[in-house]
Image 1 (cartoon, rainbow, N blue to C red):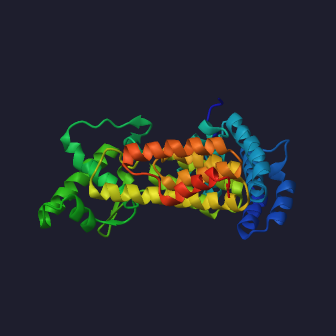
Image 2 (cartoon, helix red, strand yellow):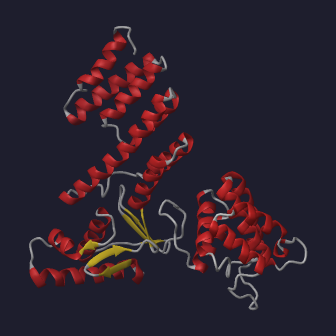
Image 3 (spheres, rainbow, N blue to C red):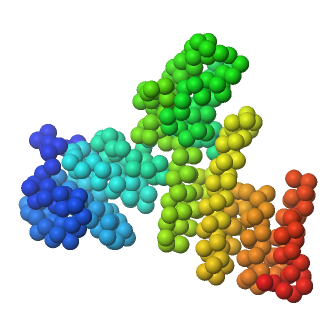
Length: 384
């Protein structure tokens, strides 16, 4: 890989009047005019143009195309980033448009384009992450709470030893369970230090916060303003935040293929129940809230597929979800219906038998009447 060292003569001034005008047109939504000017700009000439100007021209062209045609834009983005890497340019890139550079970096990281080089660009430019759903964004702190909890700081897992770290971790996880943004200190104290009161509790909170700051090793990771505590969106990636953002994107995505891809990414993040093994009341509430949120998105996507008669895709979605939530009867019932609609009667009967056995063994209950009615209609030769 080429060196990232660039000439001392380069400054973070956006090079070229034409490119400044292109940027202004893009900001105003005049994409056609911006494209025409961009293609005729002297900074975009392939011969005799300084590499930094040529690079920024390619990036703006990639941004223009991404806004119009994402697939074509990704091809241009790949060309641009490859050019920048080979030219050794990793600083002073689109300094007048850090939001555009961040969006391009997010697109590249999402689609595995020049990943290592793009992560270096992000760090050098101190870019703000546009969304926690960009999983490869180089956050200094990564907090995992789904399944086995873990904290990774600058690529190294944090090892916890001793009871002294228990309270700081509770503080962190309670913060995550409540959205991670502007959680009132009084609420934190009332929940985590319920046995104490007054100044004793505030002193205990301050001590736990200081210990947590030392554990995370990045001072800006925790923000305390106006009696409210937050995890920095810029510094900290949290799996729950990423999952909820992906689910929200899936819910609002009109294209069914893209929606299913977003749901698949969401399910890939779900490595297990929130803080698996912890049984505090606030943990159980957060766990159930998150599971319900996932099920709403799954059911909504499944209903769209069913209404369109796309039963194979619906069956794949439900089957994938059942790997994570085998005791959710609604998923069992929807998958059962999908098999029946496709004429897969043997698979439907086997699925019902497995669900019935699992529910009885783990939950001590039998399938509900609506689920039994499906299999009864099948047995009577009336699959609808």
